[in-house]
Image 1 (cartoon, one colour):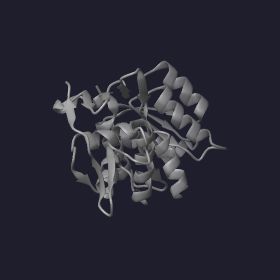
Image 2 (cartoon, rainbow, N blue to C red; image 1 turned 60 degrees about the horizontal axis):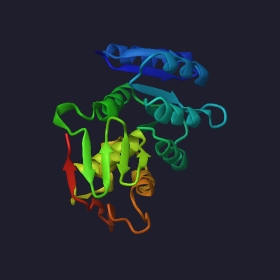
Image 3 (tube, rainbow, N blue to C red; image 1 turned 180 degrees about the horizontal axis):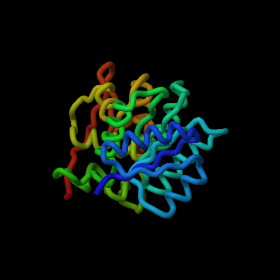
Image 4 (cartoon, one colour; image 1 turned 90 degrees about the vertical axis):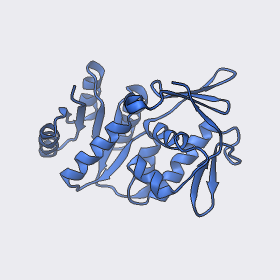
Length: 234
């Protein structure tokens, strides 16, 4: 079955151009011109990914991003004319899988859509990859996008947090450079700051003391290392 993509953009010409290109590459596409229309569509049908133009009045685009990721379980790529780093980091912290500045080339957009769909949580179990992991006191369920530990504590992960954590879990005890993490997650531009922000957010959920991390350790001038043994459960 073709992956389903929702395009949310107030500009009709942009919606039509992106829809035509994605349809040409075999995707099932729906479009919406505003956040309310997008919510109505997502509430009544399944989408694998949303391309969301975030330059809407106020913070409506970011609010919708969070709702799509955390409330509806849909991966999001944010499209924006605003290329400032704080805006990019904010979108990624809210769970966006990628952030693409306008204008962009359609071939690049298609490539990033394919990348986001490859790493989305519902596909984690494909190609022999584990669905559940155990590390330290934690157990990760990639389908539910949840980490749980003794005592009943559960932490929900955004799509970008899950992607980052899985990169570490598949390469435990290895130093991973920030640019590698950025490329894996589809982050571009000022990648170091974006990756650092996501690592900090993940640490707050994972570590007993985020200032003295025992799982995700910083290796000065080189990157990060996941320091705990990892067990694939299934």
